[in-house]
Image 1 (cartoon, helix red, strand yellow):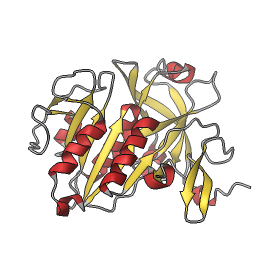
Image 2 (cartoon, helix red, strand yellow; image 1 turned 90 degrees about the vertical axis):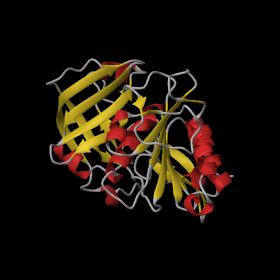
Image 3 (cartoon, helix red, strand yellow; image 1 turned 180 degrees about the horizontal axis):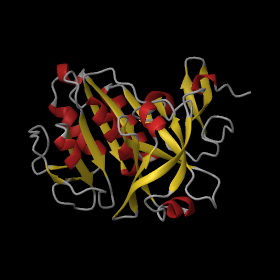
Length: 291
């Protein structure tokens, strides 16, 4: 029998009004909905299960990118890649959609220099995490975002200097720059100012530029495609740095009842099958990508 007591009274079902719905290059969309209960309870790394259209009862899990607890809105960044999300992309401002959340185990930060690495639609949890740290002076986050399609925002040269990075790597996410949080962008597509390579290449350059004392205060938080997460986990192991990864899996119920999103995780008692939706989506990287 599935035990969901830990999640009882923490997940809300809201008929959320669409406040804005912006289309970006590469079939990417930023959706803002009015969902005050979810906005008040969401934490970086949690997601929502969204009914894209009434003709498709099966919901889609989408990571939360930003919230305003005071104004009651929630932002999602998603890519229209299947029938469900393509239907979601047609929804208009003023319409209501059914949103269930927040769901899942969030990121937890234990070091003063979190390195946040997001790829593709894995960027939203990194933006959410960064925003949660922007007013906390005891943290010095650095955000690396990678994309092989145009970024869903207009990159700009960063006002935050990072001499430890390769020359010419100056493109940043404007919102993060406005918050005073260092960020840099990577791609293999030759975008101006971006690092021409993988997110792990830029992370390695940054880590190599730190002294031992600074590197000891680094931990990695990451979300993105599975191969990217595997590479990030390998990098963390190489540098002996703590690492948390947020996994992406197909989900049916999204609340731990169907066990359709299980993955094998290494535990002190041996291998165990864990549900990505409620036992994750955030896991210790070493438990998922065992050496």
